[in-house]
Length: 408
Image (cartoon, rainbow, N blue to C red):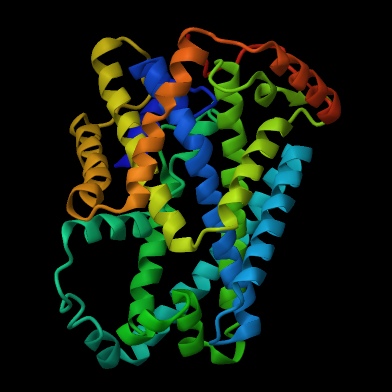
């Protein structure tokens, strides 16, 4: 449902910046600033989670059933994060080529899992089906646990919002066949995994795919964690690519410092935006664990998704004559708004956790920045000198034209 809403927004408003541009057009400057303020931190938090997850899978073949040292995983996560940051800052073509290669490798790995699951389902039919008999036999979770489960489950199926960040460069199709196909394929893969893995093994396993490999192809089990690491590497590359474009669009609209909107004079990439987001992601990696990062990202991300779908509803009524190559069934965005706010409010109301309170207060803290610096346009002269020095150091300059997602 979310992909359908984003498909309409992406084809109607093909601007760089994704949700930021849509919220700015539909709800105004203040909600857009709250989005860019929150995204400046929660999207790097998502990248940090991906980098840690990559390190988890990449180190697993060397440690077997034993967990790898946290220091090693964090050092590896920082290394891959900065490697991709440098690559995206140097060459767009290289980043796109890398994305294509890793997507192909990911699909090959998913094919292996799918075929292996089918074979086991056929050869061990009774044993496999027996595993589904008590699949709902555990205790019923409370409302906040349901919300947190959605955060961690839907995180694996994210990515359907990424194309909107590049809409000014790649004109979106009105369909999302690629995301539909990927989601269906991953769902089938997970169902087939359940046919050969007991609930206890799933609970104690470091990673689901590793458990599957040990049961199905034990002689070459290391291939699966390596394949998952490759998949995560590609997802991280894509996320960093789009995040720099979000920062670029926000800076061009005056919601972030001017330096972030500048392009490198040699590679024509938003290098300052890439460096900025990579530094923040690195800070998140050092003190954090994967589950905390996933919950924090899910809480913040779903609030922003709700605002984006709300902007679609507003635009339907306020600007009915906009050219819309694709129109989603109107109840769908209403359902998305309701679901988004349930996922945001449920953990706070039924099981308050300080990390959610801090995240919510952080969003409200954007008002402290917005009023003096955006609304009243307060400016400090010394910032111009800092910008000038960094501009010379990074060899960047302002873009020739305004961002297409400016929506003024």
